[in-house]
Structure formats: structure tokens, C-alpha cells
Amino acid sequence: MIRCRGVAALLLMFICASAHGQSEAAPGKSPAQRVETRTEQAIAIAGEIWALAELGYLETESSARLQRYLADAGFDVEAGVAGLPTAFVASAGRGRPVIGILAEFDALPGMAQDAVPSRQVRAGSRGGHACGHHLFGVGSATAAIAVSEWLESSGTAGTVRLYGTPAEEGGSGKVYMTRAGLFEDVDVVLHWHPDDANDASPGTTNANKSGRFRFHGRAAHAASAPERGRSALDGVEAMNYMVNMMREHIPQESRIHYVITDGGEAPNIVPENAEVYYYVRHLKPEMVVSLFERVVAAAQGAAQGTGTRVEVEVMHGNYPVLPNHELAGLFHEKMRTLGGISYSPAEFEFARTIRTTLLGDLPPLESAAEIRPSIPGHTMGSTDVGDISWKLPTAGFRTATWVPGTPAHSWQAVAAGGTSIGHKGMLLAAKVLAEAAAELYTDPELIDRAWEEFELRRGDDFKYEALLGERDPPLDYRQ
Image 1: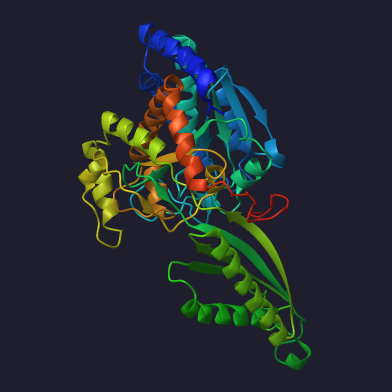
Image 2: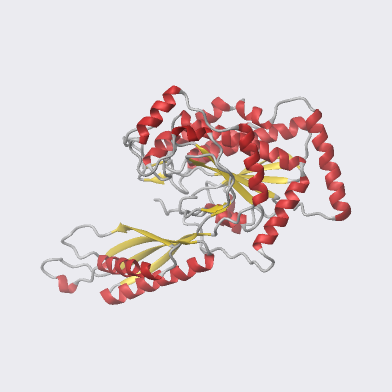
């Protein structure tokens, strides 16, 4: 890792300064211009993955398509890393620094939608890209390719490494990749995410932990022999009732949500099996652990009270994102230079129509062309990027791939993500990533400053332990 001091640091600075001089002197296109040369190809691949809409750990075709894209551009691709069939690592370049770029590609269940500004379920699809991960994956891959071409043409030393990370939506793919040591030799990790605005503010997220609570009872005829049955659904409902009462007595920044994934088969049968799926969130990982233990205790009490038995399977767990202001400032600078998103008349018409379906205080459509001020903050959502950010300097940003005012995990996000509105945001993100990476390769002091900030924020006594424990990846969690 580039945290050299003394003679080693001076030597490294000399080498990188020489490479920087070669870069400036060498003819050729900038990283952003190289992204532009792949516009049609990137849009086509994003459309393919949008249509596939494959769920977590089932993204076989989506992952393969991204791997082909990178291999065709000269990357060495290692598939099936960290025990995850759809995870991969693609590398190009030589030497240090090593810059990692994250790519996601999983869809969400139940969010099938056509690329139109009204609610129209897309036939034959189990899910939809309601978080825009088709854009995330292709945008990041396009940036990595542009960087690799720039490194080669400019003679700049360095390695770009694209991490194909599956199952972000509840599967914690990056946690297993972190646990497997895949980021140990990386100097900096960069990422981005689709959104309804352009924002590179440094910020953190909530930590979270999830689990499936499976209740087992005794089946019987619900009318003629109910006394002989013990309802697993009663166990689920009793648990939910107790957890909902618990909400009054937890920190107000917490979030607890659930869905009943199995409530029985028929009303005239006392349910023998039932299941509820819970998420617990809070900024502090230790509070997430404490709250999850209380949820488990509620489940155990519910089982005892209903004469049933409960099994708990931890599904995933993510750390909060550890912000890095040094890297966030670099992203903000590049975004301001490149500018925001401009809509065509047809895109404005699409946006105006879709806005009629949105709730709340909506920002103006013209805000897609703006770059938000860089203001540190905290979002209530969670991401498995968080675990990586506690291992090495990590930063990300967001671009306007959706109509302003669109929430993530909505059909409106799926719709816009399948149109030129989403593609424009994706290409802006690819340019920002590529330009930021180029500056990092030619400025080792910037990487050193990012590491100094990282070590200060993380602290000397930090020891990483995955919130999901030592469990194997839940490769069937979406089946």
C-alpha cells in the first residue's frame, strides 16, 4: 500500500512524476474521451443486463456479459472468486498503485417494469433494476476499460482492477470478497451509484443485519381439530407484535423492517411452517448487533408462547460506510468539471409524465443538470461497500440516472434506468471514475493523504469481524 515515507516515498514520487510527465506529453485521448468512444457499446450492454434483471447470486448471464466486455478489452478475468459463482476480478496494467473499481449487477425481486412512464409490469420477468445496478456494473466496467487504455497509451505505471460484486441487495457479496482477502493489496477503491441527483458528498450509511426466522408448528384441520395443531403463523405474528412494541424503546435512528415470506398454504390447515424475514439497521455496528439480539429474543419468546419452534438464519450483515473526504473531494472536483445531465425534449416529456406518479416535495427537473454542494451526511440505507471501506480508503458518488424526485427501489427507477436518462447518468459516472483514477495514478501524495485520513478515522484498535459471522454465502437466498 502506498504509505511510504523517507527515501522510499521520494523514489515513488519521482517515478510517478516521471509517469505524469509522460502522460502529459503523450498524444492521445483523455480517460473521459475514451469513455465516449464506448458509448454505444456501453448502452447496449446496459440494456441487455436491464432486460435480464437477474436476482442476487443468480446473475449468471449478467456477470458473464460484463466479463466478456472486459476480456475483449484485454483484461485478465478471474471468475468465481470468494466462493461466489457470479463474482469476478478483472485486472489490467502493471505495477502500483492498484486502484479497485466496484461493479454491481443484481436486480430486485418483484420490481418488473417496462421502460415507460406508467406502471406497466414487464412480462416474463421476476425482478427489475430498481436500484440501477445494471448501470452501476456497465458504467464501472467502461471506466475501468478507459483507464486501462489511458495507462497503456500514456506509459503510466499502475493496475486497474474491476471487482464484479454480486448480490448487493441483501446478499452481502462484497463482505465475502472482503473476508476472502481480495482487497488486501489494493491502494484505493472507487465506486458510484445511480440516483436522482449528482452528488459526491462524503457520507456514511447505516450498518445492518438481517435474518430469516422460520417457525415450525404442528398441522391439523383448522375447523375439526384445531386443538391438535400449533400454528407456525401464530409464532410469526406473535414475534411481529412484540418487535413492533419494541420500536418505542430503541434509538430513534434505528430502522427495523420485515416481510412475511411464508404464511401457510391454506386457511383450513393449521400452518405447520411459517417464516418472517427481518432487517435491522443503525449507524453503529455494535447497536445493530444489540438490536438484532433483541429481535431474536422476541422470536424465541413467540415460539415459547405459541408452542412452536423457531430457527434463525443470519442472512447478511454490512458495516456502515467509513467516509473519506480526500477522495470525495476529488470526485466532486471531477463532477464539477464534467457537469450534470441535460435532457432532450423527449426526455423532458418522459420526466414530466413520470413525475405525476411521484409523492413528496419534488425537486425541479432541471436539477439533473446541477452538481450538488459537497456536504458531509448520513443516509439511512445500507451497502456492503461499508465493509471494504473499513479495510482501505474507499469513496463513491451518485449521478442522476433517474428523474429528480424518484426514490430508489421503485418502478419509476426501473423505468428511467432503461432509457436514455439512465444511460446519460451512467456515462457521466464512468467519466468521473476514469478521470479521478487517472489523477490518483499520477499523484501519489493524494493516495497518501487518503490513507492518513482513513487510518485516523478508523482508529488504531479496530479489528474487522464480519457482522454475518463465518457463515457460507447464501447462494440460494433469492431462489
